[in-house]
Length: 223
Length: 414
View 1 (tube, each protein chain N blue to C red):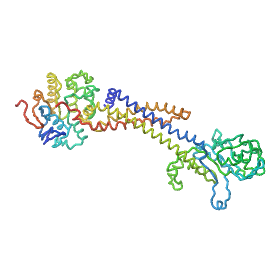
View 2 (view 1 turned 30 degrees about the vertical axis):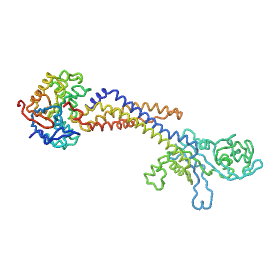
View 3 (view 1 turned 90 degrees about the horizontal axis):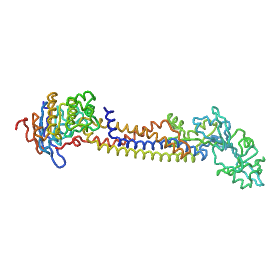
View 4 (view 1 turned 45 degrees about the vertical axis):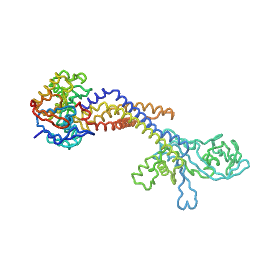
């Protein structure tokens, strides 16, 4: 059974349509890149697939649940049980340490465990930055904290919106290698939005978008 | 984790938090001080208003054939001490017995039939179980009475009302004959009331003159009372048992009158409505003004908290969006902000409490000339007021926080 099934997804804002009847199914343990130019609707699609936003029309079934039928609080509970997020801006809470930022995600999910949070940071190579505030970390290190935070509750689905958008090539490679290692070890599903072909090709499947439509859907490496 | 989150959040927004604590402390101090004044004002103003005279009049009950026949009834002087044994005895500030009799007076060749009043000027009563003597008599219920000369020092002297003295042409030191017996005028009495037309003497003197030993016509009682409300006006005969107990145990002038009536044999005690209602109205208006000022102080402080919290929230929209994305539901977000509000309320309440002790002390000194009593209930009251301010002030910001859409505030460049 597919992990995500989205049918005839439409999303309109006041004057323009961001998504125009998108259909997509994503299998468990797939790594899917959604790529396309700015304004193509890829982030909107990711937000809808992850229950951060609701479509104007169509429905999304995630792990067998029609997320469009959930209340706002029901959706929040569903997100914390099922999904981990990584954003382009790290969105770390500035007055909390790296460990505390990871623990915050545990707090909203179940019970914070400081040692588990520290171990998660060690796994992403930040054993020496456990008590540092976000402002004391480099961009790459901040994204690694975000990866640790996103995966601390063992989600079925990891949604990453331009996770390397603010990083240089070297840091991009470090973050992607880390993601790949975690993906291989933990067997979750990744949906990664990027406009960078280099990043997109790390996936097993690449979906291209333009003007609110899917214009191609292929295996990575194919042209 | 919540405690750690709150600690870090407070440390990160010291200035905003300090402003909110000050706003809460200000509102709490003002409201708690005014409420302290309002608690005390009843006693203080009621004591002040007692200077306007007795608020209960006790007269012999006239009923049945005796009433129809116009037969005169008396109260017993020996029952007077019992007035200080009623349930609300500590609220009885004074009482004064009066015996009245019509008699012919003659002075300086002029004759007139007038009312002779016998009363106590000031009588110290030793009451059972009381260390200090209780001061009863005219001075306790009619302190404005003015005697030019002296109050009758013995049973052979009288005071003559100023209007009557003018008509009879008598002054201090003159002789006056009452019912054929000669008295010395020790003073001229001015009360602004019917006593100005009377000859006033000590109670025992009139009892002896009229042959009514141990008898009195009426008693004027001055009692501290609670302002009359709708419940106080209900007919006690038609009350349920629970209502009657509540009425009886509240210091309404009507319930105190009822209690006095119970201990004075053959009496009927009634409130002097002009006095009782005026007192009630004055206190009600003062209290209403104080409560309105409290409400304004609470509203102003809550608005201060809400404004600062909204400003703080606008800086934290990304943080709230992130928490929602991580799965924080409405309860989780509301709990965080309400916890902040409660901490601000407790801190502001403590500061406000200390400030209110000082403010109410100053008000007491400047308005009443003495420090107002600080009640133990002021502590929980201040904390409650502070929590009401901070929680009320946080409701609107929390409602705004709950409406934040994570997809909007966490939006990256597409």
